[in-house]
Image (tube, rainbow, N blue to C red; front, side, top):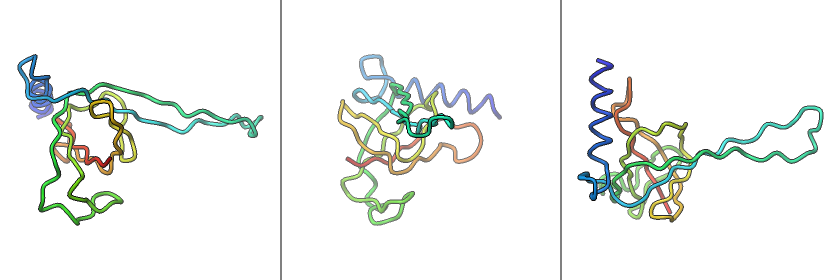
Length: 130
């Protein structure tokens, strides 16, 4: 079954290619994952810079389904102005609280759903606000 989901991940990547490349993807979308820095135990007074990883993703963005408005997703209640980005599986780590830049406008990731929910993911849904 792992080969099936790897094939589905490739299919999702192909479908989410930009329209100029024959896909259904939209705009430029960049994921930024920030990890807190680790302080030097011998010099705990020195400031520590966080580590940022970025990756450009193939995605399609739409409004959140009206049936989900008012429901809790992660640690937030979804609003009618929230959006969903369906993306290829990022190569970097990702979690709620990360930032997606949709057409160079930063938005906050409220929640993440892997597709399928268990096993090897073929795509990822990011619920975003901003």
